[in-house]
Length: 288
Image 1 (cartoon, rainbow, N blue to C red):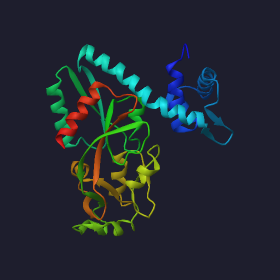
Image 2: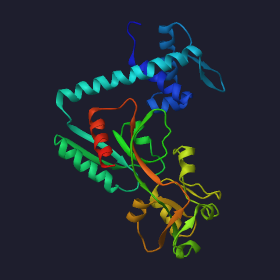
Image 3: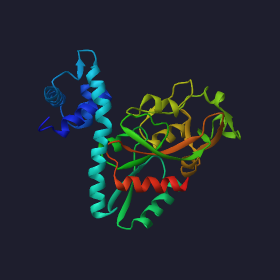
């Protein structure tokens, strides 16, 4: 195993998650041929195939499955060890880039204030991330961690503290029949078209935030969704803090009975956990 390249290991881990050379190449910011080259090099070092690939599908071999099970925690521990050493050398300093969707929840802002008070040498920058791409900024390294609406089922991401459980509300035009109601039920909501996040938001995440049975328009930003609501094209499901932040004269926000509470969670990349991220996660957990 002399001369083993960490890039080969990273390539294998991403390919094992995606099971698609094109998507793996996009995540690694390389060409598909480079992914194939890195995989071949790793397989030559090991002496056996790790991946079955045909024109229609990609699958791990039995050896590939065993190698993945052993490699994932070891690779994560290696990256964490390097991050810990760097953090220990300089303390929790530098910049922590935090993504958020919709609006900065008051609990998030309290956690940021507590974090900066505890670690004055580190600055927390807040960056809004697209409504339709809750996980992309973390994966691309544009932010160190992000506060996103649950659910989170991404194998390459860590879900940290969960907070801000809130009753859900539906945004409708002032002309909509729901506008005069004190509340609506989940069954009633299923009868109206709901704005849905466009890809690349995963299908399960899109379905959780547009659970109605009537198809609605897809949008990439929250403002697009609210504009369609105001125009009477569809309704939009929102958590209460986001609804409160986006009050406007042509839109009414009505509580929904019978849906699970919305919740926010702090997520970061499994291979990007640093002392800064862990320190901030502790502050988020402390606010409850």
